[in-house]
Image 1: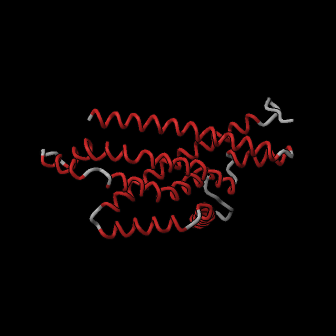
Image 2: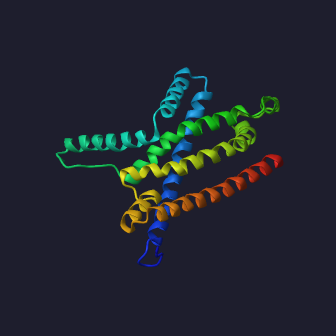
Length: 231
């Protein structure tokens, strides 16, 4: 029988859920930064920037996320040891697992986030942009009053989907030892010989985070829509 008291696994599973949420938030923030830069590059008139953005998107879409995690984890450790060897250190070093996982997932998700942001800016009606320019709006004012609010409204559904994917992809980080929901469920099931119980609890935890996320993005979409209407 599963015990959730001080001697049970309830606290550990709850901590695993918090770690999953923290990794997802950090990864999504990184993907937004990368995605914004990628979208800006693709929308720019600078050909090398567009080509670099296209190459990044093709690369990230073509490589499995799990492989990106492995490459960053082991490649980063090798690079860290190479730098350390210059200063006489010969032992094994590795990058922080949390940071490695968050960066890897963020890099992988940035390609999809970038396409969402690019599509949102391209969806802004050209007539509104032309009308704003005809009224004498500067480039910054046009961006702040017209393009950014409308693009945010169009991007939120896609960003919500990107967040859900990022949240679920955090389960992959368990392969490098980060104790999040999946890793904690594996440890608990191995210790208690109750794999179905703990993996079912993990599924419920992911479902709960997903439902809360859906509510949050729905509220954000409603707020953005009201803001655009007021503007």
